[in-house]
Each structure stands twice: as structure tokens, then as C-alpha cells.
Image (spheres, helix red, strand yellow):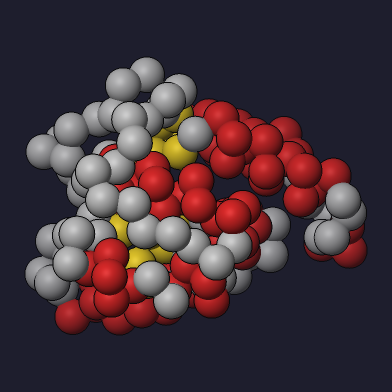
Length: 159
């Protein structure tokens, strides 16, 4: 699939840790994000390699005590994430200290995503430089706070 145009609704990229927080650990800080995706107020974009990484993390048994439901996780990814088979390289490339996280940054920049939602320190360290490219790199909690303050991110809070 080609990259969706940002005009449709704001695009966002979610890193593996935040997907795990949402779909495995049921972290309350991810619930507003899930609601925005479910309601179509934001569009999650990802790549096949991101789903592969999620499967790998689940396969390592890191979250075994939380009894993750792989079928639910796969179904949610398939239903809510528009998968981009191959994104063109971004015009400006920000290099992440963690090479495993580079795919998230590259896709967000190439797709002109509005947000990259992450808790990873190596990704968050790029926030200031990414903002110059029109990309906000935020934790779920910061995304929620901006959303509650309304309008800086363009999504009205729920009524």
C-alpha cells in the first residue's frame, strides 16, 4: 500500500513498546490513543517489519505473565494499522542511536506523519530535531496532555 496522504486524517507511527503497553499491558496512558484510532480521528501507519518485531518481542515471552492474546494483537494491527509495504526514504534522515528504532523514525518522516508515539529514550532524544521536520515525537502521556489541551494536535477531546 502506498503511504496515505496526511489530508485524510493525522498520521501517526507507534513504536513496539507503546503497542505492547496498549495491547498487552493495558496501560491506561494508551487508552486515549486507542480511542483516537478506533474513532478514525488519527490513522496509525506501520510497516511489515514493525509487525515482525512485535511478533518477535511476544515470542521471547517477555510479557508471558500478562497472558497476551496474539490473535487479538494481530487482528488489532490488521484492523487499525495501514501497512505501508515500502516507504520512500525520508527527505531528511534523523539517525537514531538504536538501529532497531530507525524504521519508526524513517517511516514517520517519509509519510509526513504528525506524531511518532514512543517511550524509547533513543527515539525521544530526536524530538527537537524531528519537530523541525513537522514530526512530534511524544510519549503516550504527553500526547494525552496535548490532546486534553485540545487543538495543538488537531484532535478534539471526547465529549
